[in-house]
Amino acid sequence: MCVCVILADVSTDGHWCFVVFWVVPRSSSIRIRWASLKNRLMSMCPSSYSIPFYPDMSQPGPSQFYLLKLLSPDRKGLLHDVTHILSDLELIIHRVKVSTTPDGRVVDLFFITDGMELLHKKERQEETCSTLIAALGPSISCEVLSAEGFQQGFSSLAPKIAEELFRVELAGDGEMCSSSLISAELKKVQTATINFDNSLSPAHTLVQIICADQKGLIYDILRTMKDCNIQIFYGRFRSDKKGGRPGSKGCREVDLFVKQVDGKKVTDPEKQDALRARLRSEMLHPLRVMVVSRGPDTELLVANPVELCGKGRPRVFYDATLALKALGVCIFSAEIGRQAASERQWEVYRFLLDDSREFPLTNSLANRNRVVDRVRKTLMGCYN
Image (cartoon, rainbow, N blue to C red):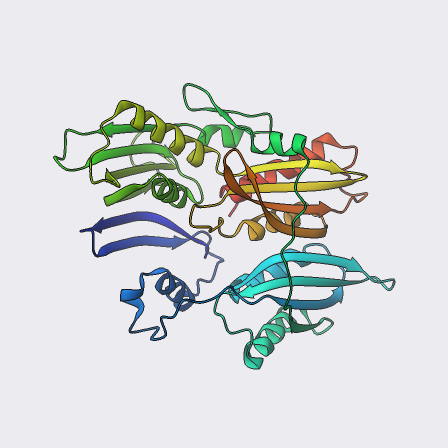
């Protein structure tokens, strides 16, 4: 969902959790499907809260894969437009294969799962196809088929490319040192102040964070705390978009009262330093973006760390295709897979890009840098 959290309060007594988000659309042109957002939030709640709404609490098995076959006239931005529609329908893309017929039409194969677990029903399949046709025009045709036996295979990156993609170093002041292109606008957000205070509460450690606001910041902070086994008992997130005080424009302030998993405060200076370094790394550089050569072709790589629970970062595919559409770059194929590196799992998106006369990539370092910069800015929320 394209909403921005401007204020949030979180509190828990160890048994129940109370969460309040004040949100606004990221853009005035965005139509928010509030009912859908509510259903997604409900599905994330623990089972004891969900029983009145979801009586069948049996553990679900792996999601069934389906093949969405789309035949359409070729045009720039088609893949993102389809991705936008599938996202609104709560359908998750796992792999895309694109091919062009001799008459100039495009055959897109999307291997998808359904977040609502209803795609096995004819009504849901018809809704998917009718929504695509209504949005893209009557010249397209589509069908949904079962993809039983589909295995999400993924070819590992070459060692040299993987080393460069996943490498990132933090300087002593918290700024990023990386060989990838960082634009002047993004350098402005790559600072953060993180302090620990054990004097205000007899039972909790206060973690205070002040940093530039960016898309997914709350997600990055909370997933890092969870992966580091830090329990949050109270939290407040504030965003100052208008700059209510000097130097605060676009600033995010976060106060978290936390404990370790053993119930103790975070008092050890070494543990504080380790948590501070981990938070800085995950907040300031949550994604990796590169453009590399793949034989005679050009490939865009986007990677993000996978949570310990196995979940990947939301909407990466959507934002990457949006950025490429804005640049007028066509996508020949796309795949999503996972790879182990730097002692953790990464979700890697690989886009094989079409070289064109209007936007050449093979021999143009400037255009490759433009792709990296635009994709990174879109993922970080610099473009709404």
